[in-house]
Length: 322
Image (cartoon, rainbow, N blue to C red):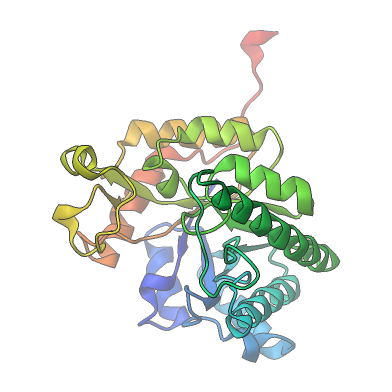
């Protein structure tokens, strides 16, 4: 497995500077934002798309530092009830797929998006319970919208030979593994997970069980390495559906944390091992969103933990089993 980094926290540096810094730390791969919430500090999607010389410069910059591109990232809401916002997100995603194909990068990471609760609503609606029954009706409407959209998007991705890796994220339609599999079954195998454990921890989902569940269906296309810590006193008082700002750390039930500060090194070794059991050998792309440390310190500490957790060689022959 490769240790990777989503380069968004290094957006104040040039791509060359960011790659040099990460390579010196022993990183193997970079995930590059090309639109949506990750932004495009390191890759101007529209400038590079269709420009052979610009693509060559980009790939040369990455390769000069012994890195590879694990994925292009464009996280947004293509199912938004505001048609203009949905169209912008859809364009970002489709162009990211096209650019990935031109760069010979086989994965684009994104969100599932979230529709409104009905055709006349104006705001996305995250349904978390089936009662009162209008919420169940809203959820079925949302799945109809999502199935139509993602079936068409999957065909676009298939035309370009690119996998679409959806991060299971609250306030999106797909936020846990059964929903991920439902969308994959509806839209096809080009749709899979960008497996980010950070959002699963606080929902009470066992992440190794989730890896096994999705791995049984070859549904893991990419992995984000990101940790979460639950703070029990706050959780006991107000549960885990916490709307306190992320910057009010002392009042939150949970926080995104640097790898090793939410779950220990043994847990990450177990997670890496489970990913290998189900056949995943791609990048573990570190996504730094820990407000208790700087980006550089958080990245460096996360890399340090993962370097002791990942396997650098392929499995050997099980000679003892013969």
